[in-house]
Length: 144
Figure (cartoon, helix red, strand yellow):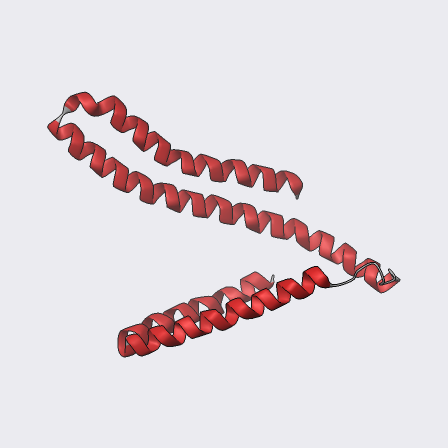
């Protein structure tokens, strides 16, 4: 649910960044790089804190058990969102790869028609990216 609420904010930030890049150029690029650096450092700090936290000393109470049950149900949703991201990302990547390899294959076949078999293999390898995303999403859905 949080992702659905954050999506419009991310779209507005992306549009604002694009507008700022057009208006200010290098200054805006420096601001964006600085903001990305701050976000990266804060994420690393949170990651280190999460890995160094001592969970063995905490006693599991009723509130903690309820929180764990809620986290378990939300992890199912996270697995489904991950599966959809895997499908979308791999499909977009495969589309870009097929666009470039397909146009290059057609250009090569127009000059030398005997390259048809090799060209189709290359285009098929590019399409394999989408199949890998499908396999990852099936694995994620199986774990949900």
